[in-house]
Image (cartoon, rainbow, N blue to C red; front, side, top):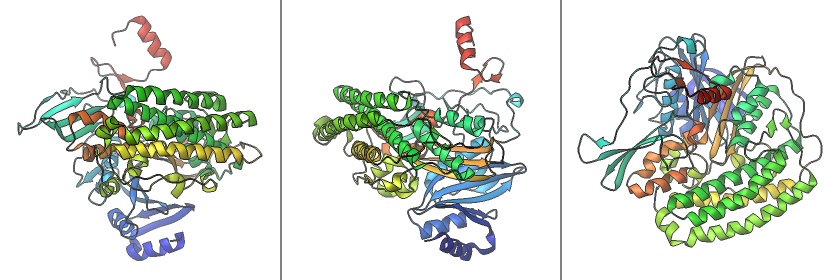
Length: 553
């Protein structure tokens, strides 16, 4: 359906309820509807495009109004259905009855903007601590840290019998040897069987969206890269693309291919890291050592190509920071071919090893229908036979010029999610090989102005963990008006509840690893003096000084 036909059909459905309709870029549609008609608009999308999933919900402070942007991928375009509600009484109907996967996104907006979603099944804090004052909303423009009220006393959750006395509440985290990042899970178990789980975010977030409003666009390239150490290339590419759309900036063809090469090296690094950790969680430490040995090869190539082993600092607004020499291109191709042979060996292990089969097959099942309802992304969705690879369906950089296959499995279990990542390793190697051999000549960067024209854009990329989305709004200055980031983990963590029900306690590490969660992508953090209730921000030098002085705080 073309944008013109889309608009005609939509106007016929809602008529006067549509206040504005625009298509600023290919595959990007923005629709503003009257208050109370957002569910009608989304219902129409679901009727016309049954595979529609929600990417996220962006709240925007418009002085006396709060604008809600529902970003939905309908298979042919990213459709943003928006509506506005008064800031003095921000109440609106929940869409969780239409798309259950919107539950966490509504809780996020409730937490940070104070919007109440009527009919939400469990509307409570998602990121901020329970002790946070009820009338303080950090992402509103009028919020100031020095106006913060004192924190409240909150009783910690402990392992205990539930009210019906048949199940036990078991708390895992936020600090736990099995977790690489702080996160708390409240598991409800009946004997050895898990009957429910409640994840709790908010232990390590840096408030990056708020900080982005005080930095220039080019400074924010460095900031958004710090959202995730593993997916850093995806975040910078996604943000730069959003700004380039706003500024109508033409990125040179060579830069697009170079972005693909580093993007895929980053994907290989991430998948190898996860598959090694999966072996460790399953109890197969030898597999962990083998896979991480091969991961070192990728890190060495990343360092040679970008100057850094992990934080690439490669993409920038208007292109990339470094060119690729022919000598390094040959080395990349040669070493990736050696890893490709190793991948064939790992595939045999994952298919035939009895330990892996017992610990992963039929464990953590997420049916295809549930994956669609919950709007999961990346390998988690493709392991349940849902085709959602942004590179294929909403191509960016040079992906529309490079042949590759979208990997899916219909087993819908932990094994399938691991196999998706294993097969994607080969696809990534083929993509890089093609890009290296077809690298266009010419510049790899263009100069761009600091001030970006007024407007808004939605950028999507396929990060290693799945769809990553950045919404950027400009007010015509060198500083963004709003930056919204939805990392893949927030899109996938909601499926943990569906996966873990009926599993054994011993299956928890396997199921969690199959999600490949990155909690720091979505969390928030604040420094607090527990005696006075004061809150503040420290630089790294402040932290070092405090540690050196032996402060009790």
